[in-house]
Image 1: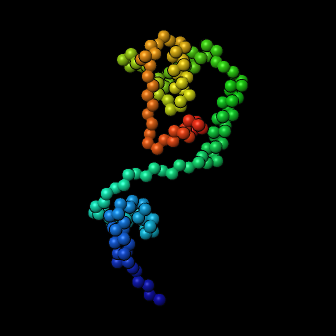
Image 2: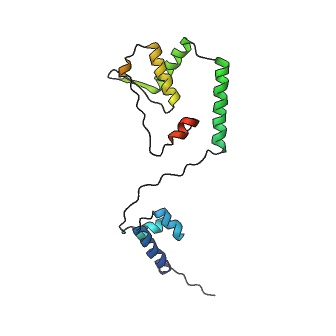
Image 3: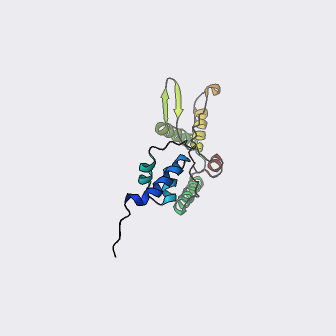
Length: 162
């Protein structure tokens, strides 16, 4: 039995359909999946097609996997064990912890003291440390929070997870 190779002509229907879909603002990935062809092929076929891009879709939020859940449970257990073992920090330990935190996460420039950390509890700790050990003008104390697009604030604040 002799088989003929389809070659490029066999893909003309796919190419034409890809061009139609791209003109309808489909993404390259979606077109490739629809036609079951390589994304690189789609890119070549549609590179000269004008289209009006849609706003970017946000990624689907997934629940934490088993390893992430285990890690979170371990962190919680260690945090609880530390609180049980050491209790509340005395003033000397509080001063040392704040100084260490500032050394690792803080900076000073033009009379401003700055602190950068993604953990809200650390920012609260730092503000408390400043108020406890330094005379600060509360009217000059400001906190800036940078949020990225797609951040689930409800989940972040209720579970402590990003």
